[in-house]
Length: 492
Image 1: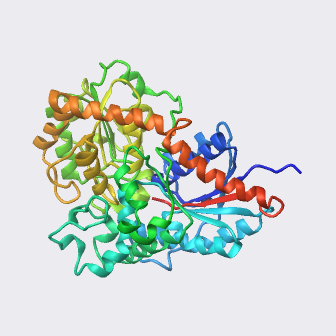
Image 2: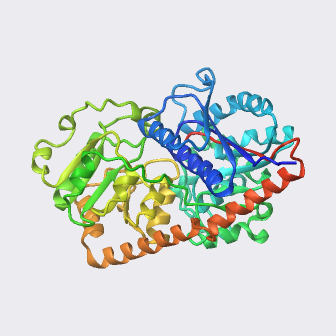
Image 3: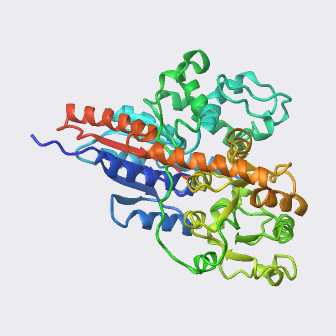
């Protein structure tokens, strides 16, 4: 009897931090491991970057993308609810649609892989007799903190940000109070309750897929396997399968016409992700800092905001591209920098820009997608964390991996002055000692990443083990399950 190949279904809500690696995971399952893949997306507003990511995944068409009915959470969260709370509630409300979609498929799935905020759907897997996994589209340090937070919830008194000592994670780097993730900033907020719940639910899975690679974070990954350090979580296999990054699209625009005219590694790229915005005062200082550095730059600009990053998360992609930067940048800035800089409104093809030989530095909010894209292209960073787990990422990049410099103060806490911005740009772009060490290190990691995802590399092998496990169970009961894997994911 002929046995059809395993089928993987992915469920994702909007959010570039999760949508891109989810799509790339689907591609890798199709092209490397001969899976069939279906992607389910919870209908919601989509940014230009998200729409383009989906479109690029459809050409050539490697898998089906199906939109699920939108979920109304307006009666469940107040107007000031954080992004994490909104995402958690959205994924909770999407469970009936997920259950119905999986149940109606014939043959039925064999495994369910849920995203970080989809862990409440793990019981659906148990109910339907499926294998169950969690996909964490971030790094090992973040995962370590997440599974540790239920213990910290019992051990730590008062707010985490008020602690005088770093928060210990056995076998891993401690987390400074000022670097904790956003859900840990206020223990009375619903997002903290949701985050603790996620930390409890992840170890109940049959395994965790992680968007990093063995050679990048070997010590932390080793701690996951040591029962004396992380207890019962050591019994949950961790599959480092990254970096999962968006490939080059081959598109061209005036941005590249300008880049083609610039010397090698002479341009610093400035972008704060699909949802990052700055205050008027900070934009003014950034503009002056770039101008004072006298280095070439490409700056993805958005009008300043006085709202929180949470508000900007769902609205940044809707800002009109017709907004005139001269109305919110320093007087004369555009004229004075016309031969040095290029402003791009709202959005730029980031992977393509970072891959261009003229780009020599990246001033980034250091979301994990952007971080991996920068490393994959061998581009050193100035890290400018704004929200989410970005403060941890910034510390990891600057202090442990050695591929970035950072301002002396957290940009999310205080306005960074123009002199310091000028200094960090010069440190990346011209300081010989700093440039050589940082640039050499990021080139090493670029090679390491390429090797990890190549056939026989650590990440390729890790995903092969997972695929083989699903495939073996599929072959045992082909008439009932046909080896179906489902991945349920959330917005960032």
